[in-house]
Amino acid sequence: PGWDTHGLPIELKVLQSMKSSERKDMTPIQLRKKAAAFAKETVEKQSASFQRYGVWADWDSPYLTLQPEYEAAQIDVFGKMVLKGHIYRGFKPVNWSPSSRTALAEAELEYPEGHISQSIYVGFDVVETAPCLAAYSGDLRIAIWTTTPWTIPANLAVAVNERLEYSVVESPAGHGKLLVAKELVGNLAAKLGLEEGQELTVLDTFTGAEVAAGTTYQHPLFERKSPVVIGGEYITTESGTGLVHTAPGHGQEDYQTGLKYGLPLLSPVDDGGRFTEEAGAQFEGKNVLGDGNTAVIEALQECGALLKQDPYNHKYPYDWRTKKPTIFRATDQWFASVDNFREEAMAAIDTVKWTPEFGKNRISAMTSSRSDWCISRQRTWGVPVRACVIDCATPTLRRPPTRTQGSEHTLSATHRRSRYSTIRRRARRS
Image (cartoon, rainbow, N blue to C red; front, side):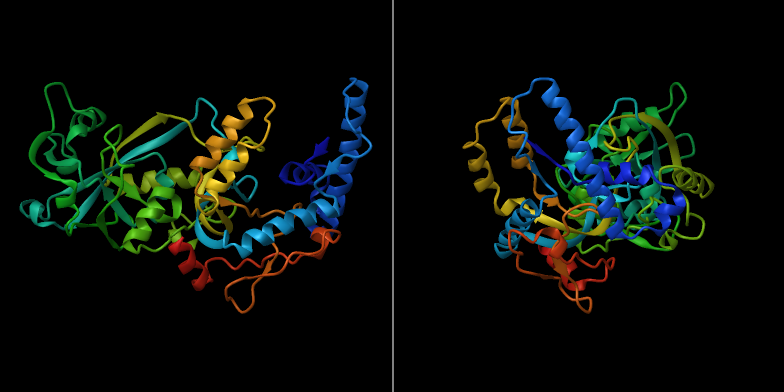
């Protein structure tokens, strides 16, 4: 038998058993010792329970992930992955848990039923028009829809699908002229709450490629202009407006589109999920999942950009440990590029006898669909990433220790957020 004796659940249990004054003065080394002691005590209790139930196993020789030889084996594999070029450090958006203050892998998320987001429809004033939209210069707004209003301060582009058709429509209810996907004109009309007999009048229709040929817009809350760009096949007409609010620091598709057009990574949110000064004085310090989200909606209402606020019931990622909502946020993290060894991993899965059988299906689906795996965590109780950063240069990854040294002989990476220009360039190439 074996036990995973590292990780956030154990660290949280230890911290929850202590007074706030004790937690404040505790060093990482002290926390690790307490976590190790708690893990070993729990293993003994669980082992005794299993034996009492009559479970047969080699209970005298279990493997524990905190054993030095096990940790050294982990780091040995990590070292081999480094030498093969599978490991890199990048500044990119990841699933982030404000409640745990750490990055999370997809497997650490759950999607409970009943989550309701305050989705919004917003109109961005067009500043410069593509040739096809020249007739509407100075009198046109881009209609976007988002379920995360708090990401509007980080908006740096609006993306369209080059193959979809987009219509310029006019509202009889004072919304002016709006740009929306042709197939979603009726949907937008319904959301705007037009009176019976009223409808959005279609004035012109163009392709996404034509619309993106030089169109820019004014951010409703900040003094900056941004472009309309061509996104990917993730832009559909299933919901929304067909024009996607793009914040490269807060979404995977947004990030990829940002790389394509050289957009900066703006992520004005701290580890606790609160707006930083980059979001502006009116939002700084507010929680993006609470009063910060509300503040953004109110600001859009005040400036006349809000077209509609609409409660939206959908599946939303939660931290499976704390049972609280997560966010997508750009941070410096270590990643394993699964693309580099996907075929080898898929072949290895077939050589294993899986009990029960459905375990094979789950790991196969996870491996086949994964691109980059975030392997770092902002916690104390775990096996450190064996690297050091010198003078803000590219991190140096040291050779693995011997199999008896374990993680006590490792040097964890020094984090200096978004200061590694060489790393960020490397991440963009990945």
